[in-house]
Image (cartoon, rainbow, N blue to C red; front, side, top):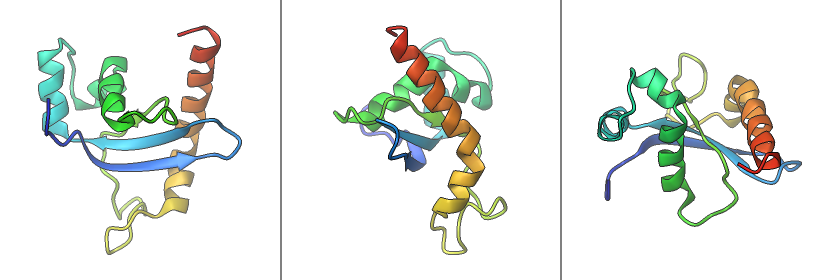
Length: 120
């Protein structure tokens, strides 16, 4: 899918004690759903966002040659002001994003390290 927007918004978190960054991406729903149909991935948008093949697809676009990103969390719900993740001028609130996604980030670090330890 050349020249297509794969993610509407991306927030990248880096922990100085970890060796890689963790992006939380709001994938472009129509693009990801079209990719899912073309690649035999079934389910609604939320379940597609949890699919390992879908994550690998988005991750491949995010990497663009950078090895510092090793995993991605696809968030089907866009960042919004209602959850206090965006300011009234639509700027991302980094401290609030970290607080909101801390458990997700911790899980990404954990599962990615486990995958690397087992040679995946």
